[in-house]
Image 1 (cartoon, rainbow, N blue to C red):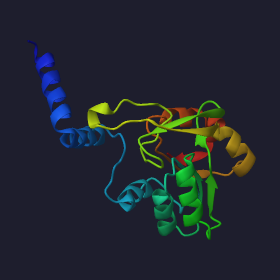
Image 2: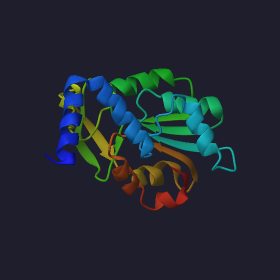
Image 3: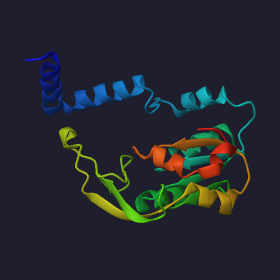
Length: 198
């Protein structure tokens, strides 16, 4: 038996018998690789990227807005910032609209960002889940089933940018769309050159 096969057996045993421990290991591994900041406090994350900006941001893009926690943190930190929040889940769109109904600085865009505009499916373990993805993932080793399906609309960010924010500089782009971040970036087109921090 090789070292690799022994290690695989151990990992499979941990995943099967102790899924909560396996999730913790996965989170630590992702953090050590720089995948997902996963800060316990979004303000800590904002403080990190504030070091890269020399001005107070005026325009932010939140791709994968979920229920608006990141958008709210931006507003708390910068009351005059304008945030365009993209979220395709109908459950979360209702929450976002209710949460920000009195704030004209938040523009809720009920669509996903991808490399192909059109109609597609959003897979999740439950309606409104933060793990929702355009990919039907197999997380059965964590006892998570992706059987919840919702039909959504996707757009190119470059199309949205040219129609809605034109040549304005985008100060901050936050993308958290469960593995489709590169697709979102590809959809920026030349807007990427008008973006200060991603």
